[in-house]
Image 1 (spheres, helix red, strand yellow):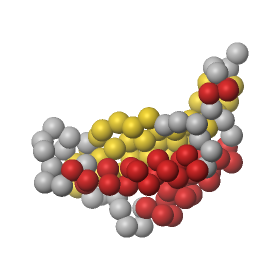
Image 2 (cartoon, helix red, strand yellow):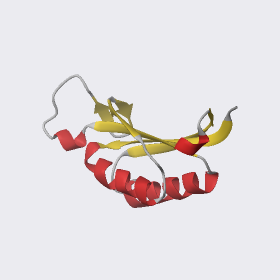
Image 3 (cartoon, helix red, strand yellow):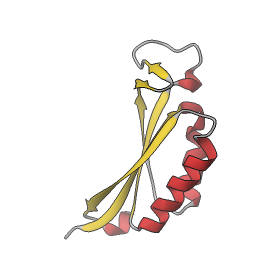
Length: 104
């Protein structure tokens, strides 16, 4: 039987990763997944295939699934207000169905 949950996707600069992971954990999420990234947006092109002068400016995508919408909203608001005024990035949520509610 599946259950409703919320997936949060955060795309930001790698240098923000440790602090965002800590924020996610403090909000009560049980885990997250990090992907290396590349792309193009309002801050220009971030190529993943060529070495960057400063690796901290590379992109990462952090995904976390939480069982309740209140936790998701808290994480989204905290990330956006803390990091996206000074750093490039986006955050979005999706409704998802999960099978093992106790994991989230």
